Image: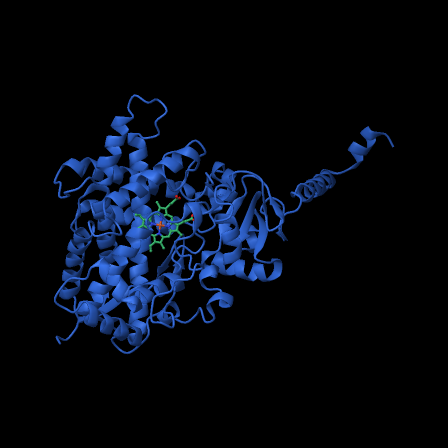
Length: 498
Ligand code: HEM
């Protein structure tokens, strides 16, 4: 039969079928060689339709089938999941440089050409900004005593709100958010805002909206072409996230303009230092410091710092409500070491190991950013004998490392004692990974540790966190980019005098 005749005899649908089969064969033969075990899923959508929420729990089930390092295709993007501590360490510590890349089209980035932040960038731009932020945190005494009076001052406002609501069930989400975001404001601009101030209220709304739209495994990353289809906004919230992100940039602009107005700080805040560095490099055409860079880094510090710390504090108050026995032990330690008459100091932590263990246990059991932020390997690399092609998306399952029964025994129990050694001292194992590990580990860790220590000690020094009817509070979380508690009504009551 002539070729032309064959073309004529086959129906349109037969041709579709033939093309689909060719596409399928091409798809399967194009999967790179020597990948870790896993699944390519279906053509076009990959494994996406089979991922159930929350993804970090889904990944644990998949690891039972494929092992601790496995691959998935989501859309047409190759993803490697590192599901246990050993795998995360092998990538993020042993091959730290290669695995420190970020993807450019995740939750926060609109397009490949955008380079202005700390969270989403990599290469020289990110390295210099990260170094600058770390130096500035250190120079401003974060983790040491110089920053402490500013935090204690903010805590006084927080305690005043609690005193006003003593004995009454109180929605705590906004109060914590205002207070803990003020700590980042202090760092960045040297100012704090009253909780009702329009700027902080606007910021809260933008951050809530942004967090609400954020996804641990972002749809847009895997199906970027969807946004080209009219009406796709209903399933693809990326455009909406982009609007909220721009709103955050405009707020960052507003607060930085405030830097030289109503100035309360006695030290060089982050914005001051950044502006000075930009001026110093004005003639250097290759300098990465710019007014746009300042806005984006400030936005990154505010988004990354306020949400995580305030939600962890809220989870902590929920766990304390449900575990009065832990609370009593912490209060006993605080009464013995700090007493009630002076404010706590970060220096007290060496004498209050149980209090630090309690806070660390909150970080562990909650794992507020369960899948961290996606990484990218910047060149082809061998991991556990497998070949990982350049530019693969790497997702570490921090939640599982923090809740792995093989490492923790009874991870489901809230038990601060797991961090206390036989000699009564604090022992934090290396597989505690709430702040992630390696070159991308959280830059705000020293601030987060310091603020949560001072907030929890100040709280329990003066208040009991109580359950009104003896009923335990629910532990449900909204599984977005971070794990926010769904329940936020907490009751605190001033402690009786001793
Ligand atoms: C409870 C408190 C916090 C937790 C559990 C936490 C956790 C994390 C995690 C897991 C990451 C991702 C690391 C990775 O991709 O491997 C991260 C990144 C980051 N965090 Fe935090 N964080 C906290 C508080 C803060 C605070 C207070 C700040 C701001 C001062 C901050 C600023 C950042 C920034 C800028 C990044 C991006 C770092 C980079 O990509 O180089 N975080 N954090």
